[in-house]
Length: 551
Picture (tube, rainbow, N blue to C red):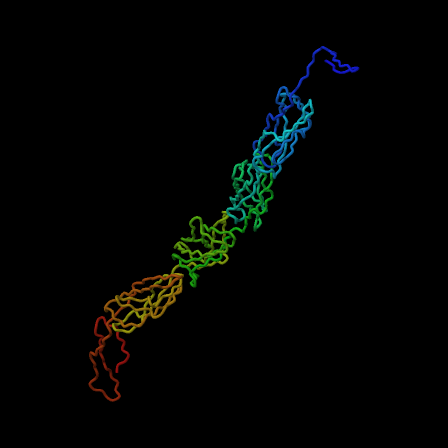
């Protein structure tokens, strides 16, 4: 080391030390970004704890040390934040030439309204020269990274429906379906315990689709299908459904309850089930009741009127007539083709039967009733109704049976004007009305019609009077006629019967001729004497002659 100076106006230069030494002259520090990495390539709104890692290097082996004193010296910024600081514990940081910092990690949270899209991340930093104290600032670094920020998942109910939407108590397999729409870009995860539906009534429901857990992609939808069995003790009326759903954003991991207690999404209407009411059982046609029915009759009309007294449609499966006491009847029940005869709420219908009364039945007073079988169309519940509000009865009797008793007159003459009368016995229990227009006696081609209608009571004898006619029949032997009882009315039906033979003896008219007269030749006054008169009815087939007087 050499000293220069003046002393007493004399210049001197003295060498005080001859030992050599050196000074290190360093370049200014050059701190650059070695790496800047956002660990999440994709994030979602409202995501927490996003991490970005930074490495700085003092680039140059001969560089002076660089000092980064405080967190404010290294600021991370992005679209939503202008000042994200690293942890305090990392500072101060001194970087010698070519030294690299330990990992500087930034952690930050995105809010629910954080801007979506490409989120560019950059760093602004400053450092000082450890030797000179000179401060350098880089604002911002040219090294950047980015994260794609998606709008958070947001699930809402877009539509819902019941099939059917009107049901009855106890109805099963009602389908409730609703669609959720993820309005966000980030997928939503729905776990089995995250979704449920609720009603005012305690119905039994089960999710049939989809199989949970399920992920609903961003800007996509998912249909949920429930099977609902209606509570048999449900209250009648409207039953709104509520949907509770929690879901999680698959990117952020955050859970949301946007669909929570979402009341009155849709409404299920519960009505009274179908109900069978047999109004009446009537034997007979309109205006023509069947108070008596003949054993062996066929196609006896019986009408059953019934009504659906419920609110749901009724499917009528079958209807059966009941007879008290029981008997032998045909065509007394009917089954309706599947799926059944439909009766809407309040609708009534008349079902007609044509009953055959078997000949094996016995006479009796019979009460007619009915039993109906059906189902509620909505619930499928089986229904049965026994007994009608109004019943009917008929007297079961043996049919009319005619027996010829006698005809008057039984003997007639050719040319005689006569009105036949006949005794006709009804040995059956049924009454019969004979029509004069179709009841007649025939003798060969000759017909003689009934004079007027005749009512023949069961187990009694009636007198039939026929129209006046002139006899023109073969003589000499009995003539056998036939009684034609056509279209007689018996217990609602027209019947016919033939009775033969009806014997009538036909004679030639009596022909009396004078054969002889014998008187005394001589008689005295006041003498009683005899006169003998011989008369003859000439003809072997003549009718008997009755001589009333001879003058």
